[in-house]
Length: 443
Ligand code: GAL
Image (cartoon, rainbow, N blue to C red; front, side, top):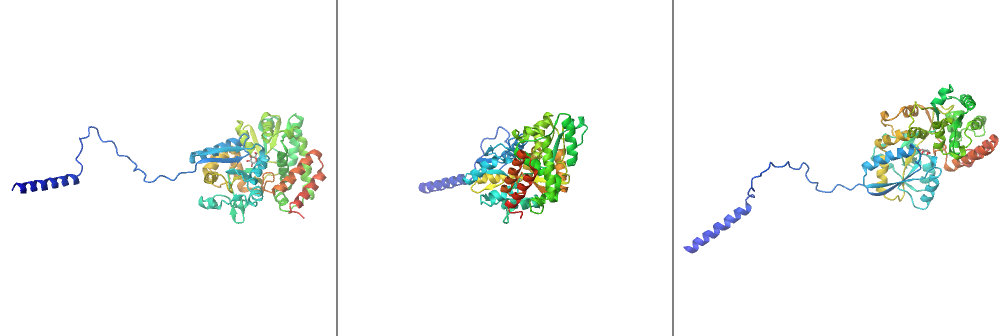
């Protein structure tokens, strides 16, 4: 009997223990404080994929006022999006990339490319780096980011080679702009010169008043001036024809253009060979010179010095070139074997983004390469450039890599250098004609 009682007790004990084990936990002591709100986010089960990190070298020649600040603004957009990437802002001073391009060529040939580098859309990009097999196509980015719909078709064409697209443009610059000091013009009762003849008249007035009519700088700026004189003298169709073999380099229209150029050089500062482009533009700010014919990066420079468009400085198409837009575009590409490819692709995405372009261009003095830029962010000059770009005849710039192959461009630079030393129009025209033959474009 006693044994049965023990068995029953043991059974009861086991059942009780089992019940305790299965029961929900007993409430702990009643909370003394109101319960805190439950966490709003459930903990993420897996880690978010890491963005690019490490170092990224961006190579450009943007060191002068306006262009350096524009680059900073673009880099800021990049930093905000990709905070783990450390950018090495590698610059080689020298407008138009005259020095940077030489350094870059050596690095590319030596298999030591930067992550990404500034390069002009058109011949400079294609003939130098793409044909040599030194770049990776970026067509996939255009598809992925929807850029095929937001970049102008003409621009995509000059970035294309053998069915692929090879770089990402950040802007459109205009080369044929005449900038002038408004106070000097008002004081001398002058209007911005519309034609070559107007220019010479205004230049005479300024000269008589003891002011340098036209500020000029080192050789590449002389070549820049020269291309605007070709455009202003020949008109856009014949100018464009110079680079396709349609316009005869030895014809009388070109002779006329060369004479205009020769005459114009009588009105520039004597020390031009020693000045960089921005030092030449500075002469207009200082009031020692009245005008400067320069691309609209000069607008960025004026603004960086505290000048306001339409207040201290005015602008007009370079003499004779109204209705024509001498265009160029700065772009960035993806070199083969670029260090930190993932970060380079991130950079290119920012270069092609609306935010990136709208941060960069209002400071740089250029208009967005995309067609959907936010117009309200651009000043009066840049709005006028946007309007002109939409309605003018677009022609390619020689000095800024769009019109001719780099070797032809160099032949023209050499011909201009010789011309400024000798001032022999006939020899100049012969040199230019043979440069076209040499380039394989003229017979
Ligand atoms: C041009 C370039 C501009 C500006 C200018 C002066 O070739 O496209 O962005 O940098 O040179 O440096």
